[in-house]
Image (cartoon, rainbow, N blue to C red; front, side, top):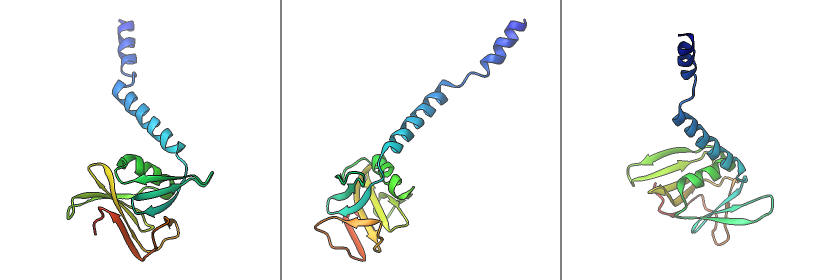
Length: 140
């Protein structure tokens, strides 16, 4: 009888396999995000231009890039964005205090808008900085 009670007590301590799997996935996603460099970001006609300050290599972040990936990359540079949905143009957005707003359609990067002239956001070659700028499918 004591063994049966002990087995029941130990069974209650076993972790839920679904919780273990969810935690492992969250830990893996965090490790992948932590491995991303902190990019310098510039707006461009066809998306964003990300420059790795460690080596100077520039990488495009074009329209069509997966929303979750782009937000993870930019969170390293700017912190977590305020996210929402604009019902007027039926698009999701992510907005940072530095004036950058990214627009998403169907879970992919569709456009950007930039209000103000924050020094943390660069302008890619071929664009001239203006007080308010936009490219792609931007709302507002």
